[in-house]
Length: 230
Image 1 (tube, rainbow, N blue to C red):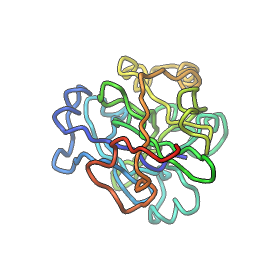
Image 2: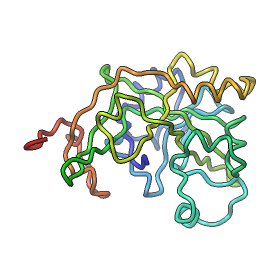
Image 3: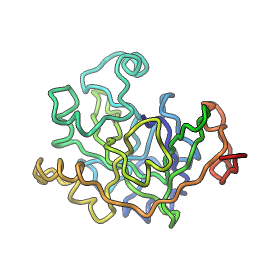
Image 4: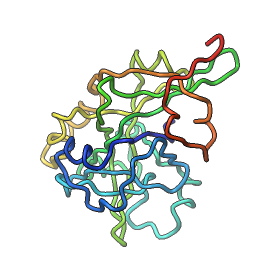
């Protein structure tokens, strides 16, 4: 599953690209690695504030949940939810109907198991620009937003660089932003979008195994790394 993503876009670039303003610009910081296993926030655009980039806690909680985030995550990890589960009767399914979100990122990570060793890869657009991950969210009684990424079956490109799991974050094209966030978009159309996600002009770089160490991050971490015999 996907517990780490990257967002290195400077605030001015992010706002210009998204056509939206940061709600809390003083709290936004570009990050080489965002580790969802810690309680972290992500920039997010919601159906309720489509021209604003808010901040949401990564790992969705039920709206009426009163206990700590970590308690719930230890019970049911909601950093990412598979699109196939959206046809179930689980507690979070209703959010897909009217609480959809876009999470802008500049990349995510995969792992490839080879000869008993795991090799991490960074996946990003060849243009270097941000792109949107599909998500859903809840708003808690105290006003905090919590969110989950939506994942689906990995495509052929991702499978070249990942053989540990068979899923990938689902993306929404920039020109599909309005349709995804519009509450009037039929549910059948939303399901169709998730079943047939947009293709992207991605590239993949092998990177240092420091990615596997939760508390290590540095500016050059995303640079290509050559492994002997890889």
